[in-house]
Image (cartoon, rainbow, N blue to C red; front, top):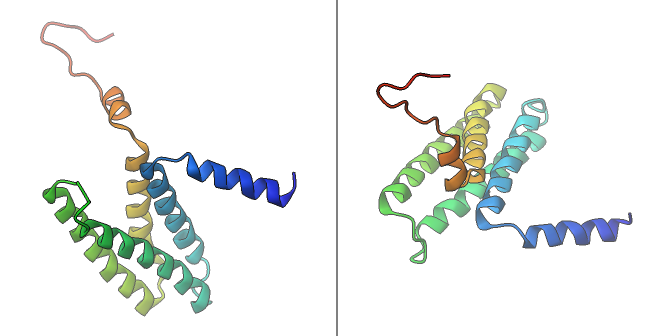
Amino acid sequence: MSKDKVAAYAQQQKRNLSPREVEAMAFTKAAVLLEEAKGKTNSIEEYAKALRFNHLLWTIIQADLTEPENQLPNEIKANIMSLSIFVDKQTTKAMRTSNAADLDVLININRNLAAGLRTTPQTAGAEAPRPQQAGTQSA
């Protein structure tokens, strides 16, 4: 398959994704870049590139939260904003120290958010264990 056909296919796939799927992909990409950066602490340019991408992603999230069209409940907006402030601080720390271990918390946050975005409300309810009723026996 030619590169043009692969690029066209990839572009079509992006058009068919829901906003949640696009966000999940962005968080996954940030986590992958940060994971790769853990092995590149001796190259500040490569290390910083991953941190810049992650910072840009979180800056976009912060900007989206302040848009009047954002219909998330205020409590969720506040929680996400608090998390983004923590991510900003952790990113600054990671840039300052160039310590690969400082990336772990950022990687975990991004992976967990990506996983949550990939879980639909229907799937989440189906995966939750059902409580046993009084008087029933487990199999």
